[in-house]
Length: 73
Image (cartoon, rainbow, N blue to C red; front, side):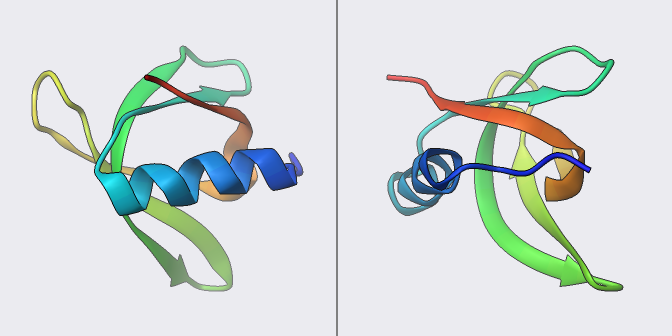
């Protein structure tokens, strides 16, 4: 399980407040650019409800599957 850093959480919280985009890196998968909408919890797992800024598709990304988060200006 990946461990997010304080800076990762800060970037995510800023993006939630501003409605801005972040880059999410997941193990063994492609990188995702998302607009986070909310933090939620399901069966003891934290996840981000987000949408793809290009297509508008809804995404659910579990925090324990994320390796890093980067703010996009």
